[in-house]
Image (cartoon, rainbow, N blue to C red; front, side, top):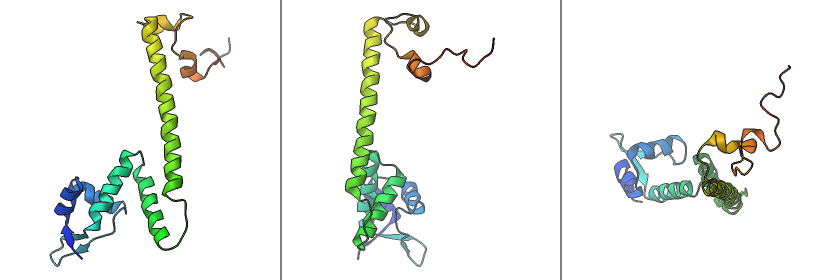
Length: 152
């Protein structure tokens, strides 16, 4: 089995040695073997694992979620069943689609503000045609004025 030193692994995976060691400390990578001189020796498969980690991060998975996915894969190889990639990818997709919907609503509102000619937030907020959802942002539609809860 071919072994690679940390600099070779980092270079092949497109990251630096500090990131490699960080992933090792986080438990995303198995602790590597050591040479008699103390140099880390990683199996060639480590490059693939690192590429998978980076790809999963680009898809929106946190490092904790990536760690869970890697651990789930290890359990499935041992015959244990846990929620796998398909279920977690479906959940992540739903999360991403919700964010896209939110961003789309924000973009539509900003376009409407531009079209309405809003130039001053305070002035715009006082106009009935103001498209910006100030009441919703301040605490929900129909929220009471800021004096709520104060005694007179």
